[in-house]
Image 1 (cartoon, one colour):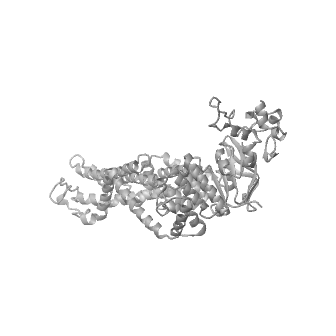
Image 2: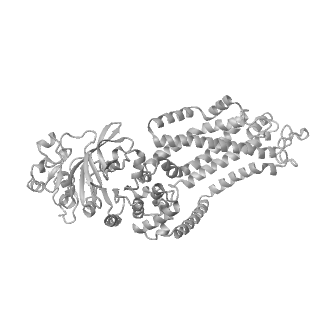
Image 3: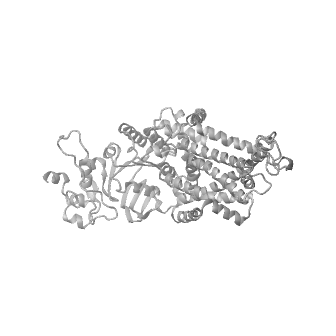
Length: 331
Length: 294
């Protein structure tokens, strides 16, 4: 039994302009102690996948089919009350912008200890004492002094550490981090990632790391899922996916990273075209219109997510045995 | 793990907060000025029985129409020889409680509507907001007059009427603030920790609404005083012989040609009171606006 298992999850957003299939048949799993990266551009459905797991979708969003099993129990059928018990105890989530993730009217220590007040009936005093210990654990110096400060005194990195501390209060078995380093300076990013990796190693907590930054994935994830237009297009061990991507989207993403050691006359390589309009997705492979490798079949029929070499990929070209690198060099 | 250092630190920080309040006074002296004026008005209302030189309703026909600065009658007397200064002081005991209750009615009713509307949205929001729009469609004073006319003219009904008129302001303000707050990540973060909607609203949303609401309360207190005076002027509020500013203007208006101070004195009292509350509201808005905070 996996810690968390998504089985063909579909989440729709019903908007005025129409229905968006934000998460379209996503399946994956994560085990205790693992770090799973979910990569994709804005609108690819990675955050919606996380919010579906937490059941914190916006009011327009609904999980229409599929199962989300946590410790073997399907969470899609749970009542809101039951979900409130799971959130913050079993599964915690941290968000992109740490500066606005803390309530400005409360002292940070009180807030970080709040899950204990909610779930364990601990009083404010004891929860602040627990917050001091957590602040130390996530590397906030002067923890005794810091817990009495208001969030506006905290820097971005410090706030994100406080948020992580808040997520750890009740020792959850799964932490979902939605772009935890995007709003931070590069040097601070590295510190936060290091912290997440250490916590993961020490506590056996599983981490889902949502990001659009491939460097972050390469740094700390055991496995990676690449999402495009609400679908998983590639899934595998991080080293396999980085060494030989088997989906053209992943291949283009990796190729688009500017390299310092490249010839300076060599132009940057963006991915051609625009992300698809989620209301009017192309037929066949959703990446087809932007894909440099596309063949006739790609526009007609959507490929399945199948094993290609060491990982899963949703691509007719690689499933037919073609190597992306060789055909790119040839073309 | 010991709580002692945390508590010591917490107390230290409370002291810091007090210093911040003093600093607020230093950087925004208008807040202190307006606050003192409002405080003074409340003290007058509270202490009127002790500081008035005369009984405000004692008739003394021999001393009628004394001009201001007469011996023992600082602001003169009215057509029945009642001491105007005492009547103005006692008038504060009518106007301020009315304003207080009316604003409380508007704040509580409007606040609850705004919270429900903003938090739950959808059909509930639509219905509640159309109700509020209907209230807003009437000019404030006309609506207040209509409500008092329906309920019967007395002070209690005047309070209710002014309170109802204030509902849309608070409902819309609170709704807008809640809609804004719902987008801020700490609300999502708190939900992701398993907080119930009630906890979310009471512990996390309401404290964040306080600043703009305090400002609005000061501003609508000024409006409430004016509305109460208007209703009393029209005979729909305080009844004779209660010393009330609006009603004093009404009876003084008859003598405007020969003895204008009979209307001017209570008029000035209303002006000063409304000015004080508006000044407090304005200066608080400046002081509490985070964009203007250095």
